[in-house]
Length: 276
Image (tube, rainbow, N blue to C red; front, side, top):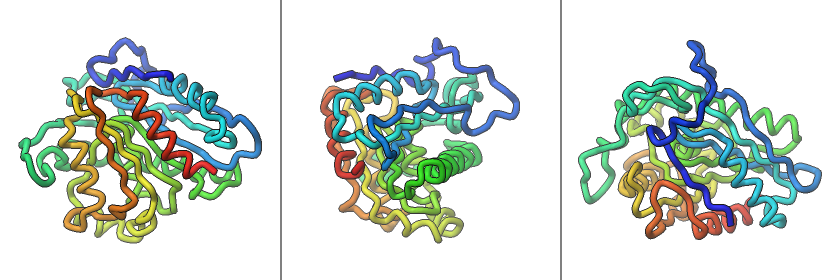
């Protein structure tokens, strides 16, 4: 199986992404992997991580669609490309980014959720919401163009893209088919704000299946912060907009900020139940 070597942020400066523009849009473009057979019955949207592009993920999913034709037979895959903009975490260097990140470190509390790690001050809320809207708009575009309901669209992503896909659980004003979050983290800790401003959307994806995978040796997004995501989205003391029995969280030994065969196999098994 194809194994993706992920190099987020400062480790990925040789990608030569599109030049920065003053009025960067939340999405520069996207790549498409066509289904093996018509008609289109399902869609997977997968967003890359910070400083990365959609090139490597195109190779990944092209391989997966050929290796598991029974899963991807009638599924079209969209791989959006983030805009290039300065990122505070990497000293203001411009790179592909769905939203600005100031910090991914917290107090390191061993129990409960680490509020400092996912504090809203650590992220650009404006850019985060703009990117949520961009993916939401893409879902609606795909639904119209391919005549499929949004319940047949699965959204996913890696790292920063995973944070984006998880956020769609409360932002999207329609039912999604599923959510995949690889090596990700939660962004908005202000659950009261979300409940006040997005209350109509919160229950829509209550029973939407979620698969989250994370490496135990991840040096960039600590396992603790990944575990925060499940707490944040399933615990009523926080946002609690996803049912606990619909949220699958799996850890992988000896895996860093990347993917592995076992995680890809688990993701495909998860998608197998949704892409019908």
